[in-house]
Length: 500
Image (tube, rainbow, N blue to C red; front, side, top):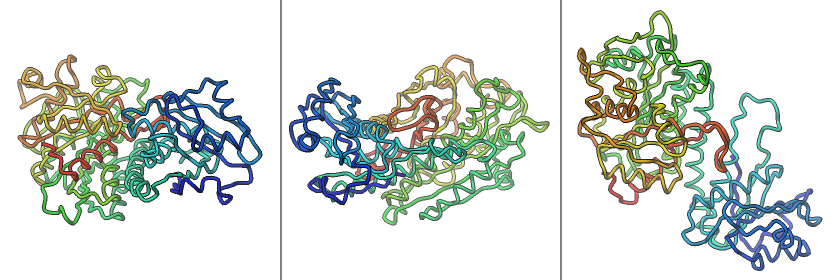
């Protein structure tokens, strides 16, 4: 993670900030600024007018995500990068995060960068550090080429209000660590991150004050997790359920907010096997569980004033002589029977037991599950939004709002009796798939049968848990989707917002 230091704006040209190769500067600029004041005026003077000449030649106007780079404009400056953040009216933290991430990426050869601001962007200086930090993430555990690792190590923020920026950064740094934990888990290959190993990694949260309980397969059998264990029975790797409980001392007696995650560490599809093309991406089918783990870490690190329980079902969906067959009927933890028509619709079976268990044992004030559940949601929404389904309109509205603020965008999806009838079975209480039409909706209806009257929301993150291309704050690969969203929702709760 980037080392962030917050320093007084007046000291930006002090000798102590110099390096042998010269200084690297990244300046965030609003649209239509003429570069004639503040830090830009000083840099233009030091470079004998090179800054404004470069901006004129490249037609740099400070438009959103527009950039201008000067290389070695004078002996003591190695590089100056100007990045626009667009119009100052209605400036958002996300715009500053993206601009700073772009600036950091353009300075990747530097070990240290000095960042300053023109206009209102300084109000969100901590978010600039946040965006740059998220954008510099790399998963290089299995790479031996040093060039592939980010070289930027340090970012100095030069601001007027050091105390306010430092306080904001402390919270955002905790969230970034949670996002990184999630990205690391999702990026791991399935031969490394199987259910027992996933459980071991969750146990490390005890080091930051989280209570962790691991339910093994034998315990799950005793409890009646028939739906979850049916998915796992084709694998040599034992199923687990991991329970993470974080409670601030002031909120221990509150009914908890429950976060539930699908943790299929590899999904072959089982007997209903997936096509070979793209199957390697199924190592990411535990993105919901990873997001829950990352969120719990973020909350614990920033000492959130909330009582939160995270429960994740960890299984591997594989083929063997003992694998679940299409047509099998299993009995869930809730006692409801399920006709399994397609073994590749396994995530909802895992979540059915975990949702019912969480509701029964923890009596939460609300439940939110995250799952890479259906390909249908990708057809509906592409890779820009996750779908949100809910039995509580207030909770759905709060989640959509939290998504707009955090950058983890959600789109509200419908539910209703007509969709629910699609999963009725003639020989069991329900079947695990409906017709192809509305597949993400019928999957949500299936889950709804296990939550009772508890306020609940289901986030289908199949299209957003991993990226096939890079974005300013996220390289190609795992996105960490869900951590920023859920942290923002709980931040609203801490601020007194009614979530249900």
